[in-house]
Length: 280
DNA sequence: ATACGCCCCTGGTGGC
DNA sequence: TGCCACCAGGGGCGTA
Image (spheres, rainbow, N blue to C red):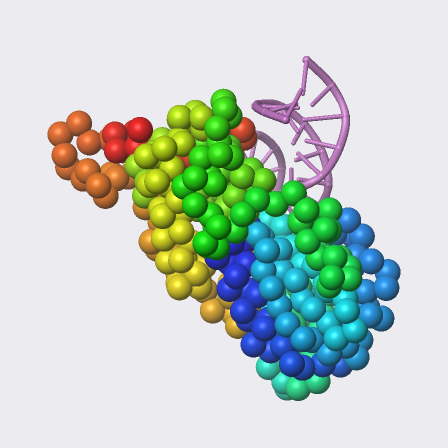
């Protein structure tokens, strides 16, 4: 799915077409996503002025004049398709929500697997929403420090890979960027989380931040169904050092004697990629 | 509290 | 060409 960089890219695409505009038309085509789209959403959106956007973890929040916020989560396969006024291409399959702005831009939420979600809540209570309430720190905020991460990992016997996927520890990382950040920090995904606090956390925090910032600058990673809202592909997938590179030589040790090849292991049912020689 | 397996759902890919 | 197993960016739930 869209992880933090992809969600950030999608949020910016929505902002460019909807912030300061009005939703002229809203249509729900299919309500049974991860949980049902609230029955009142269509009516609440129609005619609403959009005042702003915010991202929290992998969630997008769209604020409406009048005090409500729409929560959008893309799940594994969700994407947003934005098309300009006058384009009359056939709507894509699995387009569950369509918005048309007062300027005629068409915004479709497409999600084949329907693991995504839409909800409606008062803007003042955004952070109290059950899906947002337990989230850990934003990795790109100043509050995400080695000390904060160390405190969250202290005493955890679980592998660092699983700990970083836990949205209560840090919010917004997913399977791709955890592998990439651990490579950058030269830490094995198999290492127990309680051994990270200290110097390793000092490497890991900037590694997570640099990985995410570079991915955002590249428009995210494109694979399977992810494209930016304007239809362009993100291109960070070309910068992956380990994800999806099983059997290739690690770029930190190509050709070196005893050079390890990138290895794939399953942890908690998800693939982790790492270089067994340089990641310890 | 914590950790793991399983489930939600559709589609793409590669092997036979 | 067809069929089938397996895999996929998330996350919540029940069970130990």
